Image (cartoon, rainbow, N blue to C red; front, side, top):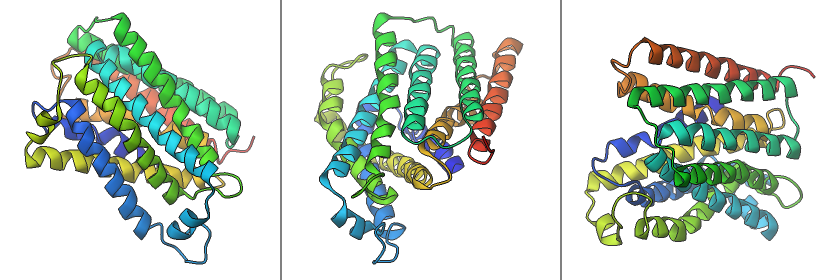
Length: 318
């Protein structure tokens, strides 16, 4: 299920490429709609177990207390803020800056905080694996920079990357808090509340990004309504794909043998999936030369080694 998380989290933004000349700010509205639809459908199907079970979808919604509901809503709101900021950073600073700063920070902060909340897994394997994944992200960014000659390092781009990365590292601990203790949420109900929080957070944040974008002219809802049916369709599909991976991640995190630190860390292997799309599907690095190819080879090597170490962390004794 964590491999599924990696694939889904690494593929959702690919659907934006199917929407030619469609700005991310506009795409995001349909993406959020897909999240809500996916969370609801998964909850009322897979989430409906034995009605007498405390974790059954409707039973759990009715028994969870307000504190745990608020934790889940906050987690979703923080996530959507982080997500929008990191994509904005990519748009003005390039992947060579946004990836190592934003995703690297998110990986380290999120894994450490989640491990503190629920210390599951061999710490040497877990954090050694995190170090190798961070190195792989840096190598990935170096390959993109060499390919495109991308040397745009603006203060705004760095600030957006840092702030987005910090928030991305902070959202998951709220999910952990929402799924532990008396009156807690189960994995399917927390997924729905997380999505509702993300939708509520998107309303002000994405509106501000439309009216005062970091790049390009301002947008209005008339621009959104001008989109084609296929454009809106792929946005909704993108949200559903992301929700499938997110729900799987929450289910694994909720399990006793695989804690949230490992679930979150393996999910961030989605960066490798995104690069696989760029290298093998979109052919972004065609003709880039041997230096770039060596960086890509090392990147995949450290990703595989790092993710393997993280995956072994819960099954190797301390």
